[in-house]
Length: 297
Image (cartoon, rainbow, N blue to C red; front, side, top):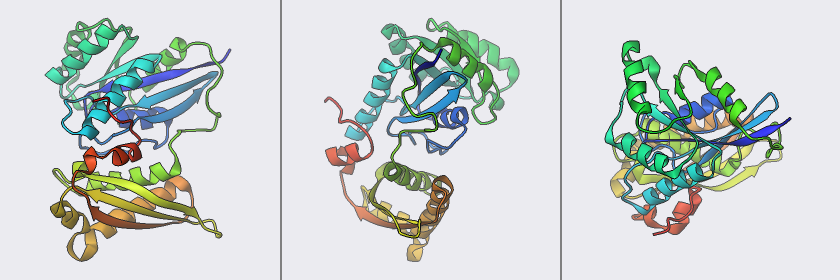
């Protein structure tokens, strides 16, 4: 008897959804950084566990949007939540019950969705504080289960997976058994470059930049040539990304190339250019290129 279904990971920015997705699938399918709002589009991570195929959906963090890009990100999160068989609402145990989390709980509770609470980052909190926090959070909605986990260390993951397998509906597999994600290689390349921008720059620069793959070509010798453009909102951002004598952009490219070689298992030649494009985060083409649908408003 085969089972299959979608499990959406939802929550406020920086709750650890991407780290959890990578931990659950055992592979890097979503980029990760210490900064909030790293994930912009939904990312699927596919895991076969016994006779069950679990399709985890990493969603953008839910926050109050300001830009058209932000609106598209938040709408994506809510849309994926509405279509999933099961929702895991992540709570950063270190941050606790802030207003952002409480607003998300209220909206999800009103939707009537099948909801489980996941307290993440328990390795960063005094154990004596976890039970009171879990009890208080669980009182906010009707949760099917409450889990305490650390996506970073793997603590509590097995119990979470067992619950998913028990809960999923009977269904044939929706993806080939050896698939890990549905992310195209072109988009993977852009995301890996964007991850390095988050890791190597500060303040508003990562949020003022987007990356698009212009070409992705497999060469006759089996190597891959990737040309990507980084759009930035301000001239100052461009200067920071390029760095003194091009040092910063070379380092971003070098680290992204090594990560892509590991993921693609072949030599990669990566070429980056930075283009100043004010207002890119309001452009329909840039939003679609990021893997998002245009917001309704």
